[in-house]
Every structure is written in C-alpha cells, then in structure tokens.
Image 1 (cartoon, rainbow, N blue to C red):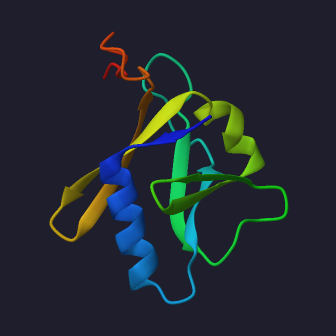
Image 2: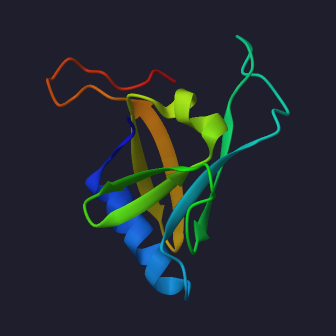
Length: 109
C-alpha cells in the first residue's frame, strides 16, 4: 500500500485547507506522452478532491487522505509518496518504499 511521507502529508494538508470543500488529493494517471529511454513512463496527476471516486482506494495517514484511481493502485503499491516544496509550488514524487530499514530503497534517477 502507498505510504505518505511527513513532507507529503504537510503538502496535502496545505492543499486541502487552501481549496474549500476538498477532503484529500486524488491521484490519477495521465496519458503516456513520452518515454525515458528505457520504456514508458507513468505520469500521475494530483488534484484536490471533495471525496474519492466510486472505485477509488483511500489511503489515510498522518491526518490526510489520498484517493487512488483504480488504475494507479498497482503502480503505487509499496511506494512512498513524498513532496518537495519550491516556493509556492509542490512537486510530488513517488519512490520505492524502503520501509525505514535503512536499505536505501529510494528510486534511482
């Protein structure tokens, strides 16, 4: 199951508080427009949502909710959702989840 980092939780909380009526962030897939040279790249869209879709999986951690479109659930299984704040913008990243065991489980670039 997708895990949420403290930085991502803080970003999601800020987004949901800034958008009236939103209860969480929904993650969907976008059409694959390019590759990274080694195959197709999954591109995700993140946006505030008032509630999950009928078939969405809900991940609730650290006081925030993430709604996963059914197509993204297998892609994000056992991953870590992280966030980088750059000024007023948030850049979400998805990394391999190392389960905090110090094995260096981050995704390679």
